[in-house]
Length: 140
Image 1 (cartoon, one colour):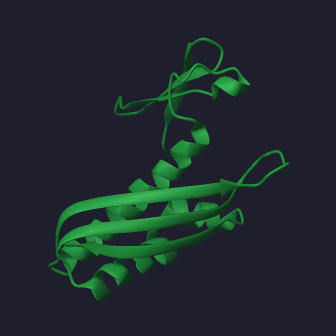
Image 2 (cartoon, helix red, strand yellow):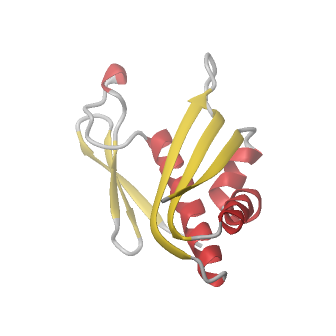
Image 3 (cartoon, rainbow, N blue to C red):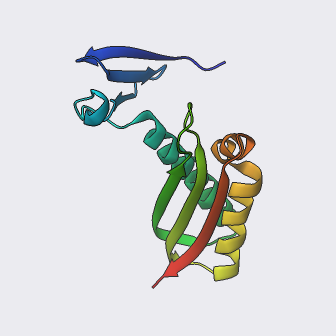
C-alpha cells in the first residue's frame, strides 16, 4: 500500500502533496475558479504523471536493447470533456522526442509497449474512456 498526504497550505485552494519519502508537489485551482497560481492544476499533474510513467518505461526498455538515450522530451496535449462533471480527459496526444544512438523501430516499439502494456497511468486513463494517441520522433 502507498501513502501520501495532502495539506491545504496557501489560501483556499493551495495544497501541497507529500509522499512517504518526503517529496512534495504544490497544487492549486485556476484563478478563474478562485485559485492563486500557487501550483499545478491536479488534472495537469495527471498528464505529467502519464509522461513520467511512460518515460520511465521507455528508457528502461531502450536500455535493455542497448540503445543510448542522450535526451528525452515528452510533449503532451490533452482535451477534457465539456459540460460534464467530472470533466475527464477524453483525448490525449503525446509526442516522444528522443535523441541518441537509437534505432527508430526500437524507439517506436518501446513507446508502443509503454502505452499499450506497461504504463499504469495510461491504463488508468484509457480505462476511464480516454483516447491516447502517440508518436515517436528521433531528433538528430
